Length: 206
Length: 83
Image (cartoon, rainbow over all chains, first blue to last red; front, side):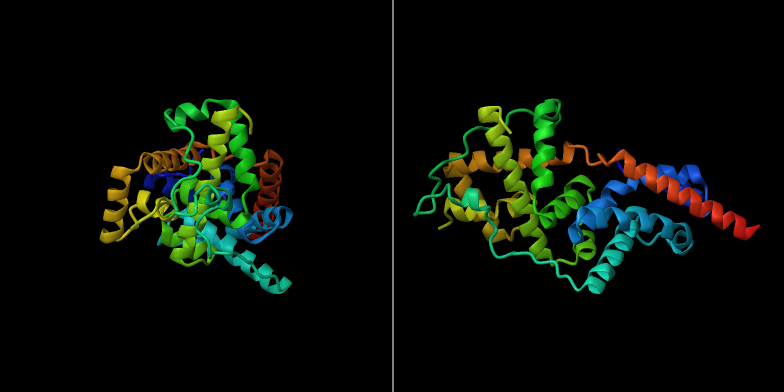
């Protein structure tokens, strides 16, 4: 399920939320919770991230009256989650540590020889379209497994940029990363998925 | 001269159209001559599309149920205060 894309749908939803309608809240919870969790998981462990998202939804009941529509509802909700997470981190005095110094995944970096050419070139060309590949249940499960195994920083960047289709500026703002660091996170995440699909297509194993 | 390893490091910037004119030209020239890098770029694009096609909405139904419950309680509490 994708967040409401049509302006009219989103306006109707927002009116329902402002009116305090339970049905619209249930609809919004289903649409926006996956993205909100992706933001929270960037900052916090799984259990704390779920707690923050729950608290955010309760706070939305009052906060929605201040929503002026300058950004989309999706981006607004993600900013609320990010701010809560940052406050929680400040109170726990934890830091989010990320290494942005290397753009190549170590496993991929090992596939080049000393002259910088491919020593172990890409083995296969993915011929099938993404939708056709996803019909393969085993590959879909494997992708789930590898996405959850990614470092949280890479996973959140990928979820917000690729899956939830946020603009780069919004992702940088929500996750508090620079544009160049976001590029590193996306590229590292994509390489992991490339390596996974390559192994899967070659061996049938995840 | 751009080597395969350098190209792999900036491949996402190329596919997302984030490179400057000069770097983009170097990548294009390299790709004309290098089958392996063409294959890598194609596969990286396919991996990106795969992630986009992959459902992002798989959230624990138990969490959704807990949120519904807390929201319903808070809405009820608000209504009582308004009355």
